[in-house]
Length: 161
Image (cartoon, rainbow, N blue to C red; front, side, top):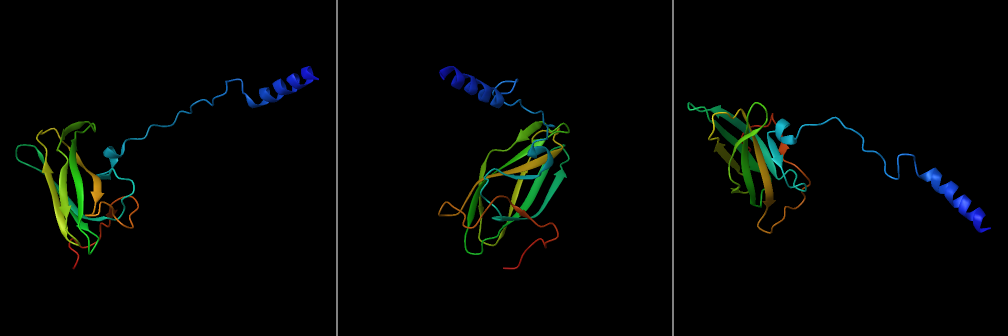
């Protein structure tokens, strides 16, 4: 009886264990580029959505070769101020980091447009990425938010109060 149970156990276990072992092989996936290479604006807080409205941005090349970036964002909450930490990264033609600013704590008054600006030190920079993290209100949380900055390119540059 014991021998019969052992044989049944071995037969059933051999059905569940493949020849490659107990683990499935890792599938090769085509490599995708990091978001810094394809997006201009990145929010590092996953639960923040629609807190800031992207109005517009300008990237200018200065006479010395550096890049000057100016971007306007509007706080979408009419009765609440927002603070965020913002950093600009400057990339070369191969998407390699050439220069970056420090994290700057930035204040976005309720329903007003705020300009974020920074420039590269190196003349090798070709494009920029604006990084946001730690978006918060005076209570420390943003009510009713879900994930990323709302971007409406056809919207007028300044909204009425």
